[in-house]
Image 1 (spheres, rainbow, N blue to C red):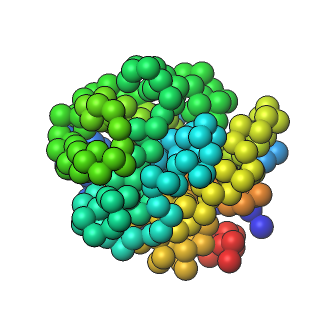
Image 2 (image 1 turned 90 degrees about the horizontal axis):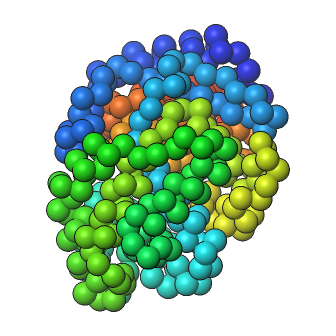
Length: 309
């Protein structure tokens, strides 16, 4: 069963918005803290090309950590799993997404998975290009293919805000560089990483990306196999085990779909073979997931049985 009525979806969005005051907008990235905490929008994209939405789905937001699953897919396409997972692990962690402790206790500072900041930085260090500009352009071109739209770009204000305040991420890079996990110039890696996190889109575009992952990497809009099936499977597995920070286990039990969140308040969901979901609700819970977005997904799961388990 699927939600096909925009009125029905709007009703669920209105219910989820009632708990917005329990969350807080991210304030450690200055450019993000101006968002209104009571905002919530959602788009659901289906394989037949139809889409339903509630709220202002044209409102743009930055991907933040949602970009991690996109760059992971890109480096897996370019270099293959053996190369990538030699430098980044595959195990979930119960620690915060920006924690450094596992680098100190794991073998040769190898990050546990690509969804925590250390792992995502290691992935970004593998992006092809002769300089930061080429690497960012390469990522954005890939996102344009996923969304089937040509107007995708990054928000310079957010990118600068993150670049000038990302002291902990720089520490993660230098720690990994010391053990040979990453190579290259740390400031260049940080420039690429902050710009990939600042890529902006709306809920409909995000739902389209989620749909491609749900369809094993095939674009329903062009018929192209943009992501090889096995790589799409790997990415969806990471979304289940690590995609919702250190609340991924609870999310799997309550909602049970591959999903990836970002501290801007975005959530991308991929219900296998059924739909892609794009949500934006900037009020976050204590682990960094959209509080109202999580509530909305719980309501959608209960009503339409989204869980893959």
